[in-house]
Image 1 (cartoon, helix red, strand yellow):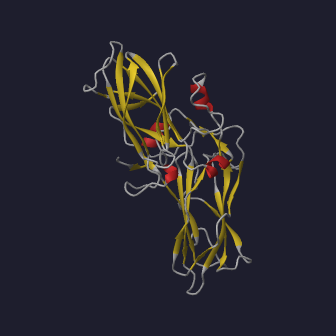
Image 2 (image 1 turned 120 degrees about the horizontal axis):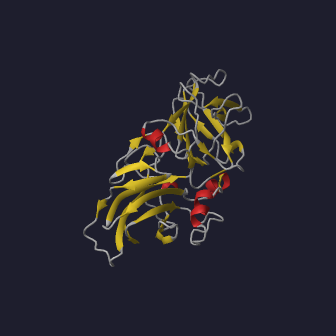
Image 3 (image 1 turned 45 degrees about the vertical axis):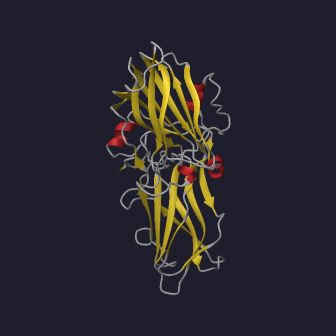
Length: 351
């Protein structure tokens, strides 16, 4: 699977898929049916093309739901289900569908246990998926695998279709923190807590974004026009549930990823989003004299102004002195992307 680099995953909204390759090797079983073949994959969450994904970012369950042109459920199947073994791709799945019809295909990964979703119930299912707003902070902290979703809208003619690889988008954002101790020799750095401020309490399973989101992504622009649930409340996320980390002078340490809901914190002074982090740090093993150091998250020139799903905020913290920590020379946040999807076979246009 090829990967690119844009700031957020580009497979999470309703796409129109046209011109899929014809699959001539699999004959339709009846005069009014054709076969639809596809692969489903994650986009890699670490910005690389090699190495093992964290289990939380793999597909452990995958449900494919196909609605016909009238909005009725034509297929609804759990095509992969393995709590123990996650995969990056579920390959070569074939579905028999009526020909000469518009189809809407939803992909739901790791969503079977979401409270109240009930994906096996066909009544009002499409509305329940698109309006589901209970991907909560508590749920993401407790789940073993991140929920993902996407949707594709396309036409089926009178030939079998091979639609190549379709993608599911993480319904979450990702933060990673790494610390480098540049204090004088003999001065070890102690870390007892991390805080990420302005994080929403809940988000949608399926993104509520502008119609132009795909164009913005493909042109390397950050998606800022999206909505989070009206019930969501922004508050600090405090992470202290770890044994104190002590870093000798000259060494570095990387924390495991933190997965949080898609958020949209608007600064009171303007119309743009803004986010900060708090670092509870001190010297060595003694936490009694630790201090909270606050830092605005930016890439060095502009502040982080979006936490649309799939955003990976990679914060590199360089500590030269506990007495004089400056955001420009001591601690800074570096925004890095998750990865772009490969295009499916044929052309992709927005609906």
